[in-house]
Length: 515
Image 1: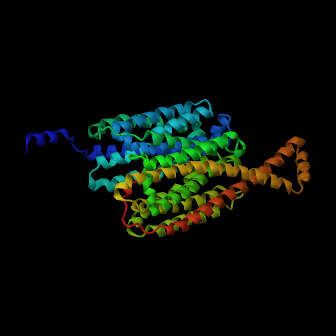
Image 2 (image 1 turned 45 degrees about the horizontal axis):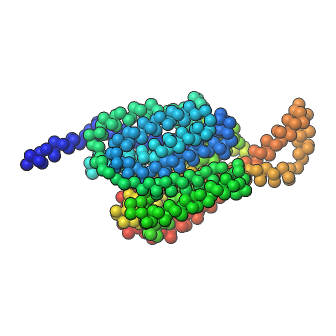
Image 3 (image 1 turned 30 degrees about the vertical axis):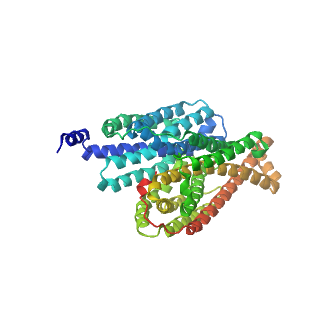
C-alpha cells in the first residue's frame, strides 16, 4: 500500500457501529419526527389559540397553513444547503433554528406574530425531513439501509398521527403555548449530540449555484395564492381589490416561475419531469387526495370543539384514532406494493377512504365519541395503501437521474396541497354553515312557541331568542360538516378511478428517495 493510500485511509473516519450507529439513527429520526409533528400538532388547538389571541377560528387556521407552506418551499433548497454548507452543519443549524422559533411561537402576543414565527419555524423545519433521510443513508452501510428507511418511514407516518393527541393533551393541561415549547428541550438536546456523532462524517462542501430567481418566484406565487385563500372570506373574495391583486400576483408569478424553470440550466425545481405523462397524473392525484385528507382531518377537531363541546384533548383522541390501524397497515402495504402492480392497491385504498368519508358524512349533533371515532379508526387502513404505492409509481415513471428531483416535487405538492385545501375547505364549511342557518331559520316551525316555553323557564325574551338561535346554529354547522365530508368523499372516489389512467411503471422505484 502506498503512503498516499495510507494517508487517505487514515483520513477516513471509522464507520459508526453498535450503540453509536443506532444512537445517530434515533436522533435523526427524532428530529424528523419533530418537523412532521408540527404539521398537525396545532390542529386541535386552533379554537384555543384563536380565542386567546382575539381571532376567529377561520383566522386561527393560518397557524397550520403558514407552517406547511413555509416548510414546503424550503424542501427544494435542502440539496443546495447541504452542498454549500455540509449536510451535518445544515441539519444542526436547522434544529437549533427550529427550537428558537418554537420558543418564539409560544411567546407570541398576537396572531400576526404567531403566524410570522410559524413561517420561520417552517423555514427551519423543511430541510430536516430530507436531510434526516440523507444522513441516515450516508451513515448506515448499504446492507442496513432497508432497516434505516423503515425507521425513518415509521416516524414519518406516526408523527402527523400523534400530533393531534399530543397537542390536545398539552393544550388542555398546560395551555396552547406548550404545543410549541415541547419542541425546545428535545431539539436542543439532539443538536449537540448529532453534531458530535456526525461532524467527522460531514459531506463534501462545494460552491453550488442556487437558482435565486426561481426560488424568489416560487415564494411569490405560493405565498400570494395562500394569502388569497386565507384572506378571501373576510374580504368578500373578488369584491376586494386586495384579493384581486393577490390572484393576479399568484397567476403572473406562477407563469413566470414555469417559464424560468423550464429555461434555467440548473433550476431549483426541475419541471422537465412533467414530460412523463404518468408522473403528471400522479402529481394531480397526490394533490387532490392529500388535500382532501388533510382538510377533513383539520375540519374534524374544529367541528368537535366549536359545535360538539369537545375539549382539545378529546378532539385529539378522535383524530388520533386514524393512526391505530395506519401503523399496522403501513409495513404490509409497503411489502405488497413492491411485489405487485401498485395501481389496484391505490384504487382500493383511496376507494376505502371515499367509503369511510361518505359514512362520516352521516353526522348528527347528538353523536357519541365512539360513533364519531369508529370511522376514523378504520380509515387508517386506507392511507398507507395509497401513500407508498403512489410514490413508487411516480418515481418509477421518471429517469433514474431525475428521481431525487421528482421526490422533492412529490413532497412539495402534498404539503402545499394540504395547506391550500385547509383554507378552501374551512371557507366552504363556514359559508355552508351560514347558508344552512338562513335556510333553517326560514323554515323553522313553532319558533314562537319554543321561545314562549323558554321564557316560562325563567329566561328573558332576549335569552330565549339567543338559545333558539344557538340550537339552529348547531344544526346548521352539523349539516355543513356533512356537506364537506360528502364533497371530499366524491374527490376520493374520482381519484380512486383516475389512478387507472396511469400505465404500470416500467421499473421499480427506490422509495428511499422519497422525502
